[in-house]
Amino acid sequence: MSEEQSQEQKKNPAVTYLGPCPICGKGQIAEGNVVYRCNYIKNLKDDKCDFHIFKTYNGAEITPEHVKQLLENGKTEIIEFTSQAGNKFNGYLTIEGKEVKMEFANGLENLPQLETPCPICGEPVYIFNTGYGCKNIHETDENGEKKCNLWISKTIAGRTIKEKEAEQLLLEKKTSFLDGFRNNQGNLFSTRLVLDNEGNIHFDSTVCKCPKCGGDVKIGNKSYNCSNWKTTGCTFNIWREIAYRKITPEEVQQLCEEKATKILEGFKNKDKSKTFSGQLILSDDFVVKIL
Image 1 (cartoon, rainbow, N blue to C red):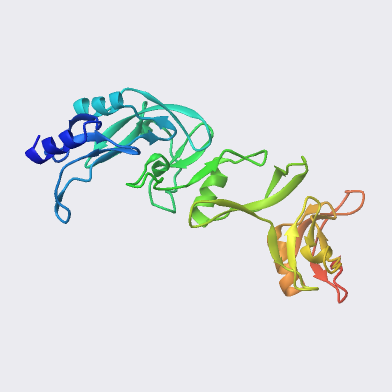
Image 2: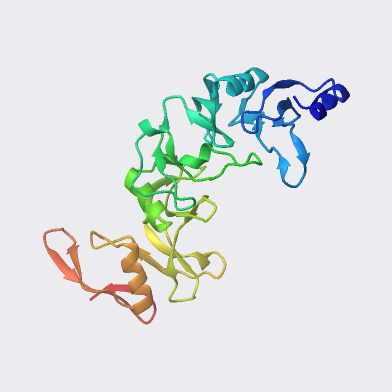
């Protein structure tokens, strides 16, 4: 310990020193209110050490004993952490370069990965028990903030999100329209998932613009409806199934924008005895007909 540090310890007898700094070798790791930090500083500009260890990582309290283990052995004992989704998992802290990192007890390398990397930070996206998460979601910066927020829960609004749907969300920043979600009242709804630049996931049920009033046409359980029906009373709608054939959002968009779809296969007559092809068109009064 330098003479300056010895004098500092005499001035601050309540400060707890846990061991020599493993990065600079000149200072001691002192316990502060929020972090354990190296106390070496000779020149504020270019002769100081910024090495620090936060007092909490992923909901786990880091004790002085943990810090001593880290300084002496390069890693701590196994610690119980809590994921963003509230799930408990085992891991430990280790020193990598000049930073403290959190590692899973069984190693991330043993977890399966999605093929598409994280679109936010470029790191691999792992398949956990409860969701798909970026490697950096468990890493923190010098301010204690997560380096990446990307987390796709395997269950969203009561619906299971499949791996191929998570892959599409990562690759395209949105999924196709998906059925089977449930709101807080238990009612089913359909939507697509959209990923923003911060890694947050949103619902978006808008298919296209309404050709009748200019509002948004949204996907519902049984039909595509104009969102202005509550405000202006617009009654424009397209059934999701016409003549026993499912109508896709892409076909609805084409119909709204061009007043007609391409020739579609798979329609059936009333008793389902015959299959026929046809073209959906919009009449002048915005009624859908098969031509």
